[in-house]
Length: 306
Image (cartoon, rainbow, N blue to C red; front, top):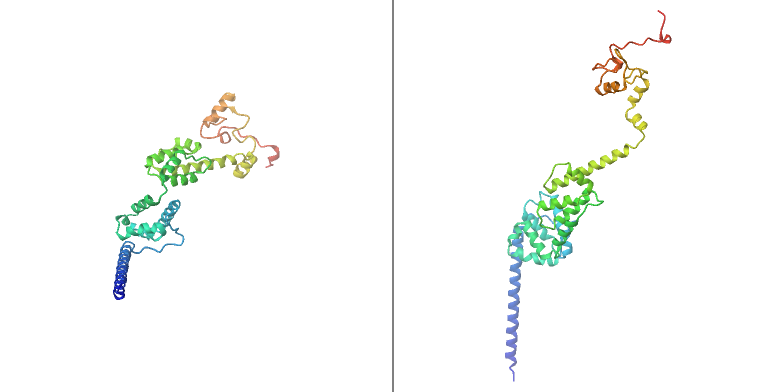
């Protein structure tokens, strides 16, 4: 028959051992939590609080690109707050949740070297959560990309998005960007200086598109009636032509050479091209100011008795 006293002692000892084991596990968890907090604090000194506009990332591969792009923009407009890579990494980790935070916690606990380099940390994050085949899809899209009916700025934006998902060198990107441009832009590039860097080429195409659009506007304006353009743009010239007496311009119908009589059509055209006087053939003045051209007598209507 079992001894009740002995059974009680055994149960008490078992319970005591269980309590001691749980206490040890709790102590270990507290120690790990302290280590984590200290390590995280040492790596994220002066890390700004996560903005309400910054999206959180929980580990969804389809949301990773949007999350990283939002951080890039946020850092770019606050350079004084994110001078060090450690600050950027700390801010990124602060915006993680769920599976992504669970993945990052051991890195902080063991003081992983990637915490000191933002690019390295982002690469490590991509290796864990990026959608498989994303780079190959972007590469295929870059090979087929065409500007089409888009303006240059839209084309540049789409090209940059795809290029950011590949590891291709700049020379390859320059070739693909140039190849996908619209034909009229390509035609203008033939007459421009060759640029071998991507940003310079993008800026050049933006300038070309602006000039082409400006030229199209000029052509549209040139379809206006000629009299409208003359009266609005050159009103003083119109008035001058109307008020100038007949016979005072170089278009005088009676061009007579002082030695040979009336000018031939070829001689008259020659003098016009050379800027010569249609009356005496000399340079430096026109027929209206010719020093040897006879002065026309005034009519009776303009004469007055002395």
